[in-house]
Image (cartoon, rainbow, N blue to C red; front, side):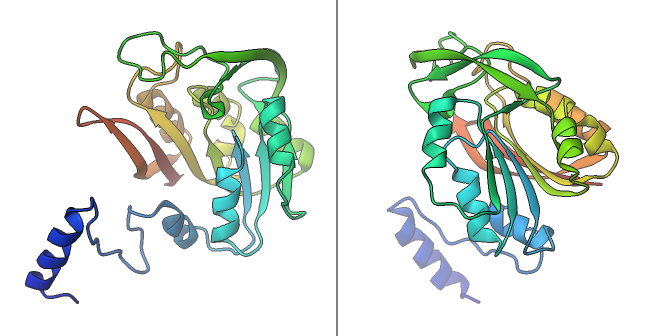
Length: 243
């Protein structure tokens, strides 16, 4: 263990460059490194993961780095972004789906923005407080939606270790389409992006997402990947587990 004076000296030096030393707890959730905590909680090297809102594979890459042989079903509705995803050299246990998941099977218009990570079923909020309000659209397309419940039933998947949802304000709709699987114990952990500021018109709120999961028997484990605006939490990734 570092002596207090040495630790202060190291931290004061690192602070000049915007860094500091933080002790990471061993053999328990630390609330610092998201995928270290997921690796600790998910007691399997071959977990089944559902990745809703894959974009260009950021979560796929993180899961492949975390587990030795995960089975990952990834969903990306944007055709252009999906084609980018297809060009990645993923192994056979990564299954890509050019499909959206929501609260019910349907067809719906999807908005593609210049920055693909912002693409959504919802239009960006034009309010002055939204830093992304001026990001331009590059096109719209009609996409097919299914639900988590329908997909798991069709694929005969009886257990999901991790359900990840990052759908740019549409997350509550995805959770509603997973209600049966969440309440019957089929899903163990949920990783979901939540917003505390207005980013999209009609977006789900942090309170709504939390209530939906708590009603289904989940409790918050911690917030990760926090982004602040004017000193306040703007959005983050929240990890929930069965209570």
